[in-house]
Image 1 (cartoon, helix red, strand yellow):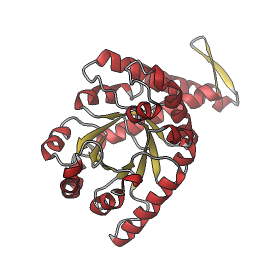
Image 2 (cartoon, one colour):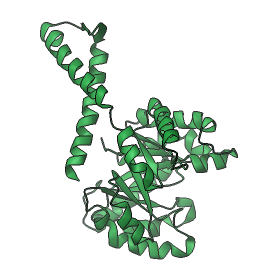
Image 3 (tube, helix red, strand yellow):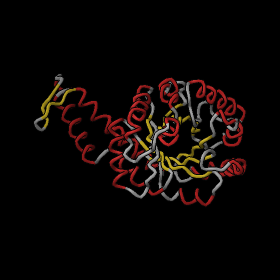
Image 4 (cartoon, helix red, strand yellow):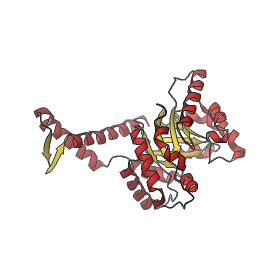
Length: 295
């Protein structure tokens, strides 16, 4: 599974911002061609992104590009400009159903073949940010094997719902929870919405804790101040990792080796589902350690 604890977005037309972003050790750098770039700068941004895709991934990070939604008629031009060696994936905006994803899958394959890239090498991350997008979230998440993650776009979602966006996020609860379930059902990562009050670290930590309990595995970040906190908060807690090591060792030695289905460990019952939960924690930790080893 891809590690996406922190997805840091950078304006595609700002080389200085990219240089700075690379110092923050985010898991993913997303060069943006959408909302962070004004209309008059779109072409300049495409050129800069094309020239800097490999540079963006040079520190062991994954280099992704966020493209404009199909409805803007800018998507094809965006893809023509950026599908080159070094690109890890495309972040598609305003996804409203499976046809949007399948259309992107088809176009990516066409460009991969034209440019000598391995077919299927460019992955897809979805931005689900409208009411219809939420309703059709599972079919979008499952529409292509290229899809590895889906982001809950709270800012556009609340605008579409005509409600106020708040840090408490009560107005987001249903959609936020539903997208996490849809992503898990499709066996992809759920990535949480940007937290705009980027100086409020305690508030961010509370918000992350709520999202993690829903199943979110990482964060869309629009200010680098939150990268460190995201990398820390979306990694398994060290105490949980130690618990998982102890539980899995005990279960393997006292249950599996002796043909039992359950044991008592530190006054608590440990059966097969608990053992599998421990293995999941260890697998997540191993994936992060492997990621860090590449940086």
